[in-house]
Structures are given as C-alpha cells and as structure tokens.
Image (cartoon, rainbow, N blue to C red; front, side, top):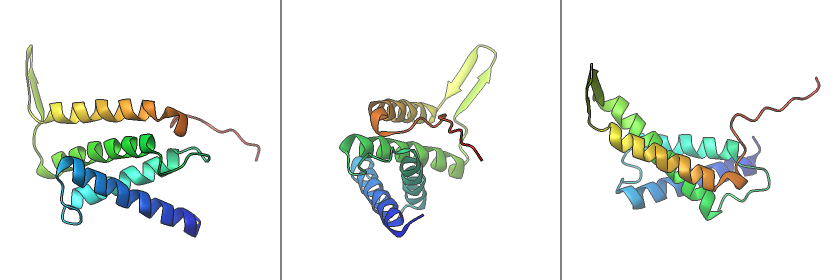
Length: 129
C-alpha cells in the first residue's frame, strides 16, 4: 500500500470513528471495540471503493459509519458473551439481537445506496498469469 493510500485509510478511519461517537454517543479513544470497529469498517470500505470514487463522498461515509456501528455491536456482544436468542420448539426469545438486526439492515440499505461508489464484494477478476 502506498503512503498516500495509508494516509487516506487513516483519515477514513478517524472520520468513521468521529461519526460513530457523534451518532451513537461513543467516546472517541476510550472505547476499544468502537476503535476496532472503525478500523475494520474503514479497511472494508477502502478495499471495496471504486478507484474513481472520492472517500469524502457523504453517501460513502454514511455506508462506512453504518458498517462500523454494525461491527461495533457484533464485537460488544462477543465481548460480553451475552446470549441474544433462544429457541425451544415454537417458543423463541431474543434480547439484543434486534439491535444487531436493525444495524445490519441499515448497513445493507446504505451500502446499496452507495452502490455506484463500491465494487461488489463477490466480483471476480480473471487475469492471465
């Protein structure tokens, strides 16, 4: 990765972390899962962006923030070890899982809206060796 790309990735990570702290009341620099989630989302967004897309595009940043928050919820649930759902026959019980599901739906919606700026993750490239 080139130096300019690394700087772009770090700036994207900082922006996603700022947006998460502003929208979801997470304290910047004090919440390790939130910092990790912002890093994961920035790396994923950076890898999926089209070469001609601008990283400061509002639609792209909103999709990145939604991805970061989704990753944050997954990380905190894993860290806390909480059971999110239980099913016995026809009876089911769910706690925090609804928040994760809503975050996943929001992430998918915003990623679809930013679709023109992102490559499809299932997109294959065939090249001659």
